[in-house]
Length: 121
Image 1 (tube, helix red, strand yellow):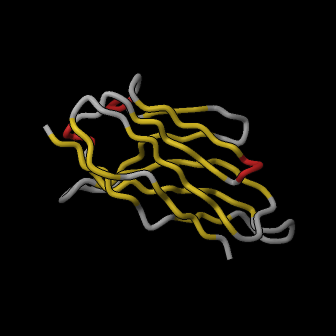
Image 2 (spheres, helix red, strand yellow; image 1 turned 30 degrees about the horizontal axis):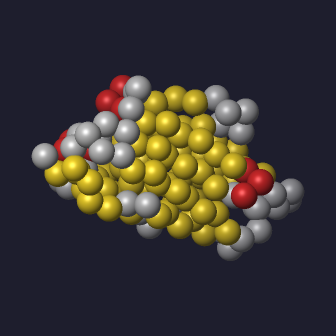
């Protein structure tokens, strides 16, 4: 059973930085695209950043130039470096991964339970 666990959230002042980490565990044959999403209070979950198995990266316009996604597939980790944080970045951040658990099992989407990031003004 594949599990994703996020860490690194917390309270930070505007202009500060945080680094989120997502650790995958379980039987994993191949990582495909990995991503970070966020959900602010009263809003829908939105995509923040994605990184493919070939390290192709995309960011939401709201975080371009401030956030950096990276991955270490050997360690089963994906990271989100968040700089110049703004109060509007306050949200629960979720790790998402498209994974093939085994050669004979189809690719599946997995989600972590989220980590709260609060940016004070």
